[in-house]
Amino acid sequence: MSDKPFLSLCMIVKDEEQVIRKCLKSVKDAVDEIIIVDTGSTDGTIDICEEFNAQVLP
Image (cartoon, rainbow, N blue to C red; front, side):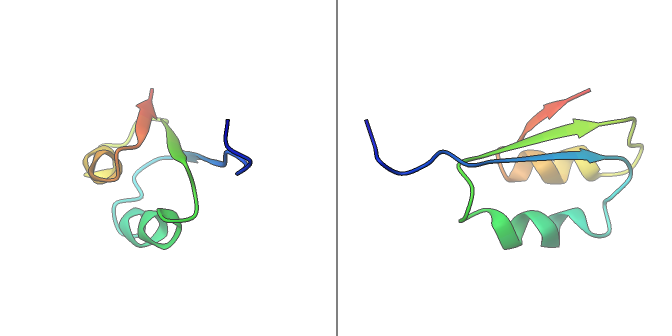
């Protein structure tokens, strides 16, 4: 077992296409997993999150 702590990023989002890529890019190397709870986006938010291998929940 690793001594390194396990760090998760959890976000609740909706229609954040304009800023989500920059946000996830800034933390991708600092976290072990990304969990996104999407509350009904109608833009490309979910697709962008999936580019970062995020677990996207409805």
